[in-house]
Amino acid sequence: MGSRSARAAACAGVVAALVAGVVSGSAHADLERVERSRWTAAWAASPVVGGPNPHNDCPSGGAGLTDRTARNVVFTSAGGDLVRIRLGNAFGTTPLRVDRTTVAHQGGGAAPVPGTTRAVTFGGSREALVPAGGELLSDPVLLDVAALSTLLVSVHFPGPTGPLSNHPFTAQGNYLAEGDRTDDRTGEGFADSPCWLGVSGVDVAERGQRSAGAVVVFGDSITDTAASTDNTNRRWPDFLARRLAARGGRTPSVVNAGLGGNRLTADREGEPHYGVAGTTRFARDALGQTGVRTVVVLSGVNDLSFDATADELIAGYRDLIAQAHRRDVRVVGGTIMPFRTSFVWTPEREATWRRVNAWIRTSGEFDAVVDFAGAMAAPGDDALLDPAYDRGDGLHPTDAGTEAMADAVDLRLL
Image (cartoon, rainbow, N blue to C red; front, side):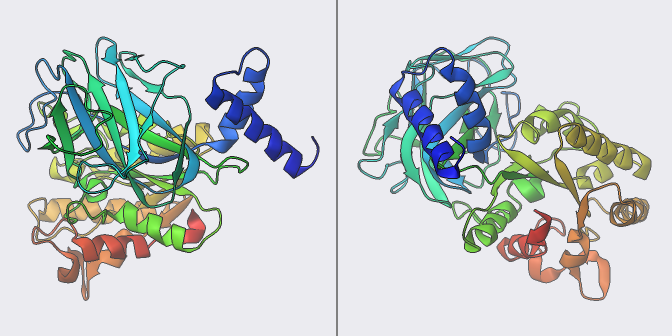
């Protein structure tokens, strides 16, 4: 077993045995070692508590869902020939019952590509209980997935679920249907849904190959969706994934841990649909991703809108850095982008912004820095978002802006 090829063959054999459901006894120790080196997160959705959302009609509140199927549309940044699904119940107070889950390649709309639908099991069973406050990882599924693929992950909830943890802002049309439609091959009878429900992540693996790891991009709406065009995967982490994939060979995946409206240093009181503070969710949403090796942090403009001080923001960044370094994960700091013509701006907030960005650039406390502020500024005015990238609110970038953000990242940092 000393050669690389022998080790790869042994790894492939263990995973094949797992897929066949025959791993037991001491083989589990070998499997655990294989799993740690093999899998990487290819997609994830940072969750918020279920409840009313004034910005969309995500059906996550009240009694939640009963006898309905959520068909989630997800864009994977990496590929492989094995897939596993993570079901999420991060804010649930009781176990979440799921009785059927499938994964398939997306054809058109809610319809899968013929012949690609696969049943997903959990410990060999189609039924699963997702623990309150946690996640549940599926068994490996044999499915060839290329990098930059779009999958349909369908989850049936017999319900009632109660308030359902979800990701509310997606820049992606998703689907809902009555009854168990997880095996549906037509896509007919599905209604539109604005949010991701039930699924919190997708991991991929290539048999016989080690994972290249994951880069997690952590932030707010500018990372989550910005003003990118719906159903086109033009968020800035998507463009970053395309840049990495274009290099060829083994490259890290890119996982979007953005959350619209999220603050770094504090919860938004009375607005739970914006999620808990970044310093609180960082351990789950960033460091909890399979294979994470580097996190890029771009967060803080929402804190400025609540008049956070420079010292408070710097303390928040130091908190993230300490959390990551305890897990041997690198942290790349992103400077906060210009916002002079947005609702956030005041002279006092601009002064705080300048102090915070100077600290990010010069303190040396991050492992590396991406100067988004410099890359996205208007010529001749460093506090103004370049009009070529501005959707019109002085804060959120368009598709051209999100591509420019991705282009500002030196890939050697990742």
